Image (cartoon, rainbow, N blue to C red):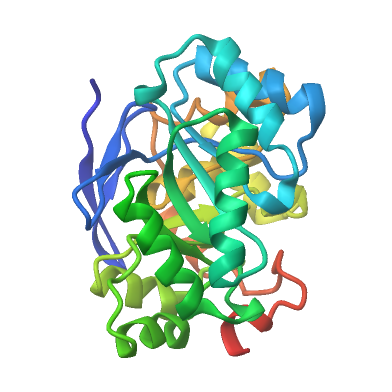
Amino acid sequence: MFTCYCFRLHTGMVTIAKGLQSRITLADGNSMPMFGLGMFESSGIKAEKAVEYALSQEYRLIDTAEFHGIEEDIGRGIEKSGVNRKEIFVVNKLWENGYDRCKQVFMESLRKMKLNYIDLYCIHNPAKGNNVETYKAMIELQEQGIIKSLGVSNFGVHHLEAFKSAGLPKPVINQIELHPWQQKTEIVNYCRTNGIALMGYSPLCKGRKFNNKLLIDIADRYKRSAPQILIRWSVQHGFVTIPKSSDQRHIDANANVFDWSLKEEDIELMNTFPDEYCTWNPCVSPWNG
């Protein structure tokens, strides 16, 4: 099994994945893979086959959400893969918050995915409100053993501080958009200081920057694709990285980032890219709302 090693960046010492089997130990003592398959904008048979194929290629982390509407497809992909459930780390997220709704939707998610538990369950959006009440419901589900770890997504510092003020245990993961054009230094530093692991969605910036000249120049020097450079940037920052794809060629290429590394000067160059793109709409709502 691959282990992890540490790499010093401007953010300090972080754990870096060395392969698809690399895992990170979360604050609750559970461990999770540091690389996986994002499922946003996949659907139907494509989603099912993407999950089945990725698991056959030794991916062990599958990320989805209630909002995606593909839980049944993912469940079929997991079942058809034949991979032992205990080896697969499933991430799911609750879209609309609320104590009662959380419990109802979570049980429905289990039914749709034909699973007995979810490895990591997250509040998808703090701007929906009722964060504390929703999190209390998640804690109760965790006490029943049907959620292993508790996380959040798109949370800013003040949202996490609200949990602390309410006397609630901290989430072990904050999943946020992370790539060279959305580095979110404040929340990244807060999470690292407080032992909250970072999971970066949209590491490929939804393909909107593949023609960026500086990115292309870096890719040419390494004889790699622009997507691979972006993924490697995320990996070397120690983020749990989940590039999305339903294309088998891309699933393979996205994982081909572990037998080479970016030089520190290229990492630093990419760290200077300006913040100018955000997946969330409105972008400010999770951070300032």
